[in-house]
Amino acid sequence: MLTSINTASSRPEPFLGGYAERKYSPYGLPVVDSCVNCKLRNEHFSCALSKGSLQDQDRIKHVTAYPEGALIFVEGQVPRGVYVLCQGRAKLMATNSDGKTFILKIAEPGEILGLHSAVSGKPYEVTVETLQPSQLAYIGREDFLQFLKQHPDACLHAAQQLSNDCQSAYDVIRSIGLSHSVSEKLARLLLQWATDGQVTDGAIRLKLSLTHEEMAQLIGTSRETVTRILGDFKKQRVLELKGSTLVIRNKAALERLVEA
Image (tube, rainbow, N blue to C red; front, side):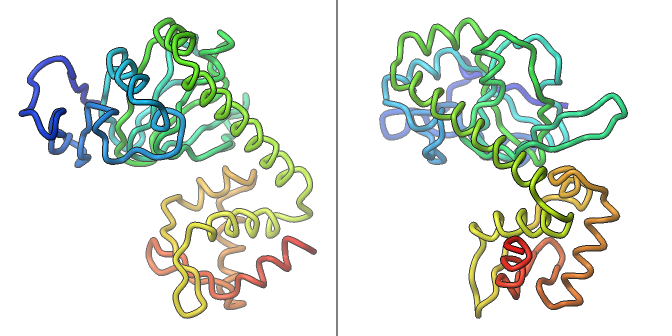
């Protein structure tokens, strides 16, 4: 089930020259209708635009709240438009004929999903599924392409995201293709996450929002293998799992494994 938010009706009371944010969607998200007044803006494509571009983007988007596990679009579908991830996180997946799934990337707020297909006109190359309750803004393909033509800053940011997506794909290929062992692949993944962790008493703490199955899909292995390697790391006192919190106690050991 998903909830569509009609931005053209039932306007809330004006607030600081704009409109106050609606309180919460059915999935507990503070829903924001306007990009101009959004307090969640960051440096990603849809957020880092001029005020005029954001105002025009508001006019052509349709905001919807999705629950965890919702399919946004599926690999092979005709690209009808793009989706801006406003809140939440989503996984970009590819699946082979045997049903094996590989996660290419975890999308963060501010990223635009389906950008490559919308520009090229080719079918969506991945399947996108929400990892948690999320808010996305849909923009039809024709409206989006016209928006890029009319706003040079939007066109530049779109090119930058396409470049970043390409670099991310290179990194995945390098990690999967050049790593000597699954332990090394998992160590690389943990070190990437560690850059966003909180350092306390020499240990790095971060929230582990992915399951062992999803971690396995990120590095091209099985859930059982990930569970076993995490157990080995725990025995070696490299890391520890406390509920959903991952505590890396020996980052140097992971770095040695990657450099070996």
